[in-house]
Structures are given as structure tokens and as C-alpha cells.
Image (tube, rainbow, N blue to C red):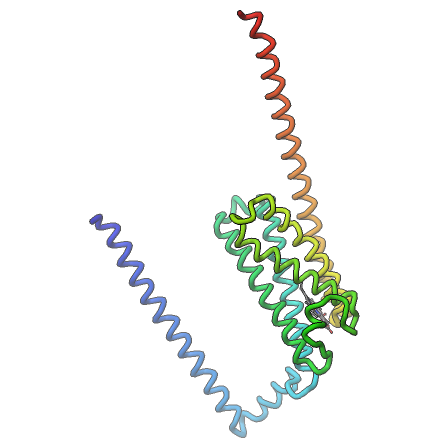
Length: 261
Ligand code: HEM
């Protein structure tokens, strides 16, 4: 057996043991920290901390879940935006010299899944919210709720589009690259729906910071999409020109042949 192969196998086993031990220790540490925190909160000294936390996170207010859904919505929007921007940067080959190909795809996939996780949290928490109550049907069927139905409906459609794009990522071989690319382009419509949804259904849109977030992220997507369309058209034109040249050259050689005989 090649000693270098055995060595690398041994190393990977040692790596696994070290990583497992490290994760176990980390889990134990955080569990102990949590238990200590809960115990301290029960003491007279901890009660002031408990009160401060309750007022900071509005834990005793009816709006608590509403705050969570808004925070999850904004986080989900940002992650989906980052995933879109990353995907467009891959398509435009902007990242190619700096980062490795497989990492860029993995990261793109990871961001989409994380974004969908936060959007699911955004929607599920709405079901528990007594301040802005929603039932299951109102979260699933667009335009039937009573709170800003048009803008909430756009969010629901946007979510379905993101879900479709993410699921078909794992079905590329089954559906074929052409269908995969066509479905992937729908993420632009999903993003537009999600942006309008956040802007016009969201309470935080009244803040200048949130307006800036939507404006800056939107501009980046517009720029990257325009760049992608230009590059795609240039590539198509180049291919068409090359094909036309090849056809002309073929015709000329065919015309020359009878004279050569
Ligand atoms: C593409 C998927 C979605 C994204 C990225 C998204 C993101 C957001 C964002 C950023 C906000 C603004 C939060 C704020 O300003 O406080 C928001 C608000 C809201 N979203 Fe979504 N959302 C999505 C899907 C949905 C779905 C499927 C529903 C289901 C009903 C929904 C219901 C709501 C409601 C009711 C609000 C208003 C909350 C408030 O600010 O008072 N969203 N969403």
C-alpha cells in the first residue's frame, strides 16, 4: 500500500476525531452557559437582567411575535438578495479569478436554503402572532388576507417562485439544462415580488435605513442583470458571427473544388 495514501487516511481520521471532540466540547460549554444563565435569572440579582431583557425584546407584549416575523422577513429578504447577487456574479464570471468554482456554487445554494429557512420562520411566526393575525389559508393563497392583500400576495407568489427555483436546483439532470435555466430566470420575478412585498407590506419601510437597504440591494440586482444580459447578447452575436464565417468558408471551398479538379 502506498504509504502516502495510508498517511492521508490516518490524518483524516485524526481530523474527524479532533473535530468531533471540539464540537462536543463546544456543545457542552454552551449548554453549561445556558443553564448557568437560566439559574442566574432566578436569583434576586438576575431579576433586573430578566426585566431588562423583557423590556428590550418586548417579551411580555402582544407584539412579540410580530417583531420576530418582521426581523425574519428582513433577514430572509437580505439572504435571498445575496444569493441572487452571488448567482448573477457567477453567471457574469465576476468571481472567477478570486474564488474557486465549486465553492461559489455551494455558497449560492447555501444562501438560498438559509433564505428560505428565514422566510418559512417569517410565515410560521405570523400564525402565532395575535397583533397581526393570519390563518394558514391566508399565508398560502395570495390576495385573500385582509392586511394589504395585494402586497402580501406578491410576497406569497415570490416565495413560491424562490421555492421552485431552489427545488429545481436538485433536479437539473431530470429536467435538462434548458428548462433549469428558464426556471432559474424566474428568480428575478420572485425577487421583484419580494422587494415590492417588503417595501409596501412592511412596517419598517417607514425607516430611512430600510428604504436605503431596499434601494441599494435593488440597484445591485439591476446592474448585475443588465451586465448579464449584455454579456449574453455579445456571446450570442459572437457565436452567430463565427457560424456565419464558418458557413461562408465552407461555401467558398465547395465553389473552389470543381476548378481544382
Ligand atoms: C419571498 C418571500 C418573502 C420575503 C423575502 C418576505 C420579506 C418580508 C419583508 C422584508 C417584510 C418587511 C418587514 C418590515 O418592514 O417590518 C415583510 C413583511 C410582511 N410579510 Fe413577508 N416576505 C416573504 C413572504 C411572505 C409570505 C409568504 C407571507 C405570508 C402571508 C408574508 C407576510 C408578510 C406580512 C404580513 C408582512 C407585514 C409585517 C409588518 O411589517 O407589519 N411574507 N416580508
